[in-house]
Image (cartoon, rainbow, N blue to C red; front, side, top):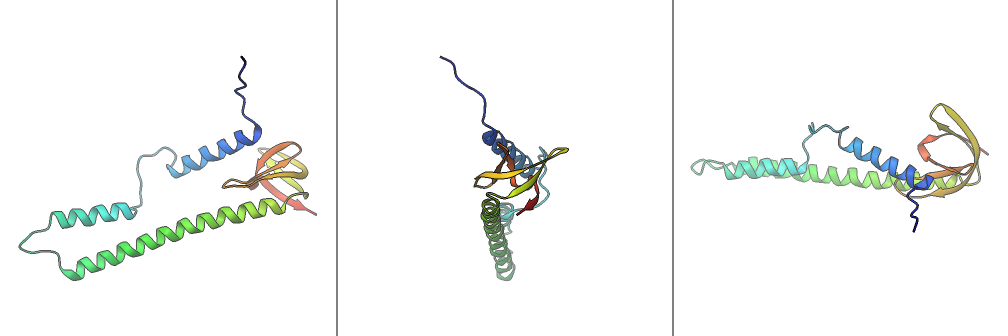
Length: 144
């Protein structure tokens, strides 16, 4: 029984993009994370409450101000997530609008010209030109 272990061009491109995205999110393999997120803020707040002096508890104003900061941070995080989803939808829509159009795709040092014959929607839209899939970001020119 023979098993074909080769990936299709679309799967290989999609996997390469997912790996690149993950590496960017991880900061290129660095363990250091320069920005604090809402989980870090909540940990700091809980640590403050656990270690406060019982004879001199945290003032109500300070606590309310920190909770307001936490709420604002959470809302900004949610907005950033929503903008990411919106960007993905817009990219998929842009890719679909290229169907049947002649495009120039930059693949490394070489430029490839051809009609877009297929589009794979999703977080990382792909366009098929001359029988090969390319990332939407590689499309440099679009013609009628």
